[in-house]
Amino acid sequence: MKDLITRAMTRDGLVNAVAITSTGIVERARQMHKMLPTATAALGRLLSAASMMGNMQKTEDGSITLQIKGGGPLGTLLAVSDAEGNVRGYVDHPQISLLEKHCGKLDVGAAVGADGMLTVIRDLRMKEPYVGSVALVSGEIAEDITQYFVQSEQIPTACALGVLIDTDQSVRAAGGYLIQLMPGATDDMIDKIEAGIEKAGAVTKLLDSGMDGKGLLETVLGAFELEILEQTPVEYRCYCSRERVTRTLISLGRKELQDIVDEGKPIDIDCQFCDQIYRYTPAEIADILKEL
Image 1 (cartoon, rainbow, N blue to C red):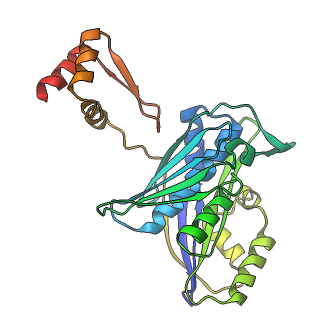
Image 2 (image 1 turned 90 degrees about the vertical axis):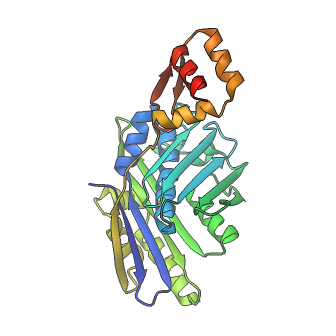
Image 3 (image 1 turned 120 degrees about the horizontal axis):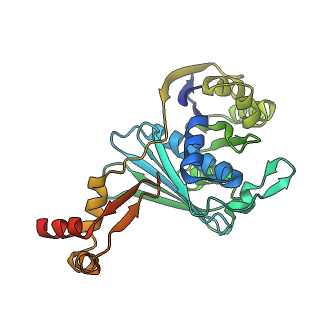
């Protein structure tokens, strides 16, 4: 199944919803960063959330960055989405030992930690990006995303995220949904949404049964007249290039570059998002210096 973002709204315009199927994205990240299951589950949830939030912005050439520093053994988790929902990310320690709440249930909250912050950076192509931070609630990520919307943007939100790992450590299913109430929504609507979420159950079970994003939203919001607005294919996409890495090298300054030349050894710079390695010889660094 292709990874898709599905956007929908109730016919009265009072409930906005988005869902994602992200199995391919999370599996690509797992392979790229050589992640063990707990890291795969944690980063997979963050990638799914970032993709949906990036797509919701609808700012041309904009982007959104989600960063979690929870104090847990995984270290920092970071995910960046473009305006369509194509996403990339990394985790500091992708190969920590398996943490389980009980047999078969990964303890993502303990791996991420709850003693820290979720930071959201919205680049809307204005002078300065919008930056909002909230204290982590649980480190389970979905609850923390919900808290961010309520505290920083004053938008009542329900968020569900899930990553199901197969016996061979590959990603069997991944995805989730975001449901937001618009101004004018009533308490009755909140009750219907809460009932729908409870009735639908765990998002990983729904995804594992073959349900797509449209099915997720129709299941959870079954008490509403739902209008599907669009479905957008998304993927794990890194924008690194030798040109961009060269610009980063230039930012080090003349002295740092000259030191590299004087040392006479090639340097390797790896992209933290896709692990691509860019090698520069002393002669190439010297050429960069000449161009400066």
